[in-house]
Length: 141
Image 1 (cartoon, rainbow, N blue to C red):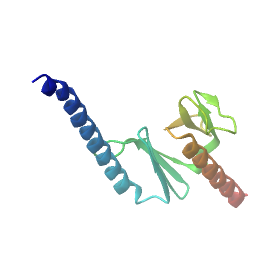
Image 2 (spheres, rainbow, N blue to C red; image 1 turned 180 degrees about the vertical axis):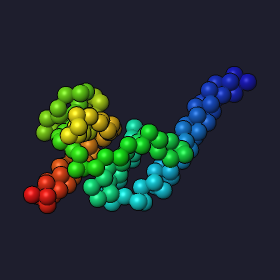
Image 3 (cartoon, rainbow, N blue to C red; image 1 turned 90 degrees about the vertical axis):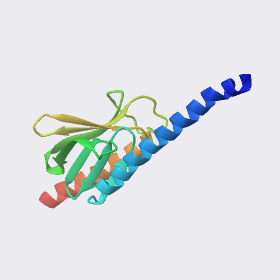
């Protein structure tokens, strides 16, 4: 009887982990359906981001699909930089600790922050978007 009572909390932990895994799996499935319309996309537990041509769309992932969606044209972007805890990131963000966000300032003065959990992924997105901005500026010049 004592051994059975000792195993009961472990069983509860396994059930909780299974529920959390199923919950996250459903979020990923919703992301995959959402991401099909984009040229480039990313998913992590904090946000979903997609780029189609000159438009960026991001939101928060849920099991039913993304919520709080925001769409922004690259034509409206004034500056784009990676931030760690609200401060501009150095070149080496791979070992960064803290909140990692891609800060996008628009020509109208608004600033949007897209959260990331993986510093390497955030750095790659910043570089890709900088290249898209350079291409856009050179095409309009």
